[in-house]
Length: 427
Image 1 (cartoon, rainbow, N blue to C red):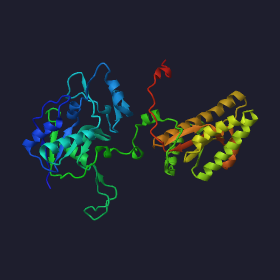
Image 2 (image 1 turned 120 degrees about the vertical axis):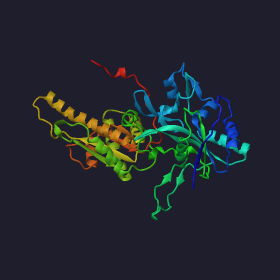
Image 3 (image 1 turned 45 degrees about the horizontal axis):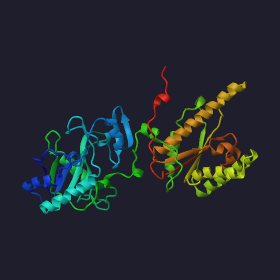
Image 4 (image 1 turned 180 degrees about the vertical axis):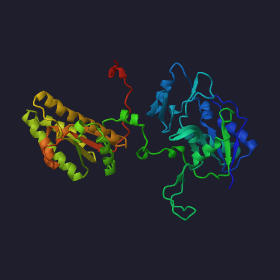
């Protein structure tokens, strides 16, 4: 098998409203094209034809970036790695200033897969051939220097080649190999497509493209994404959630989060924390029942009406009752110094409570780093004795609320930008 990668030269400088498909057809008629060939075209050419070249001013680059961004994955200085509304993760949401007029910005096509389908149909109508079309853009890659062309749109080809169940050259069954064939073709086209050369398209032959999928299939599902946020963004974007999706939380995920939790600072070289994870339906039900009975009695003693009591319980249990795992963080002050005066003694106890708060925050972040949503609720602070009995712990422990943990029902909204000067002072 041999593969040819041919530049499609002689294409004009495109403007809004131009028919890219017809321009490609004219050049391919001269080059020669056959069923199964692959036409690769850059995003920039499509964006120009589809009117996705916009003026930098008056909105400014930051405004366009915000408009094109679904979420920020990482940032360093002026560089932002963002997820676009398509689901692509790339620098500056794919906004580019190269090969456009001064003072203009190129945005990604609104629907690159749709653009590929349109071009493919025009080529079929004009040339009578069934070709595949791939739309490319250049992306950087984690852990690797440089950029490569990747497929952001496709038509007439299956973008993924699933080799699972087939055998390697030694006869072993492949169990995990799925080849991103559309990305491989996109990358190969970069050998003849060049920004400086003004060549926005290439013809790849010898592959015999088959199938018909979309480049959207190349986007990894968020539930399988182990690198969804940079560490700093993972901290910034954690939100308290009130609803959870389906599915149990693997115990190894809880254990990883607790390892993060116990890295919190603690006084006097102590490790004053414990985390009790209740992940069985019977255990959660029993714990919630104990807490509910204690809350009712406590609130009734304070003169709270029965309706108000049940309303408070309903709001709390609406969160705790649907989470597949409840985690009760606890702290104890063994190891504290014994001070004769009350003020210093209270300060000593406060040190342990602050350490507990740091550990709880680390736990929440450790869960979120694995894509697990959470909500800390102060529940057990008002029924400590009952909770300790339910958890079979002695009274040296102080339960510090309850963390409801579960898979998010949906991606929580990104935190809005804040004016840090409201919270920060330099002296």
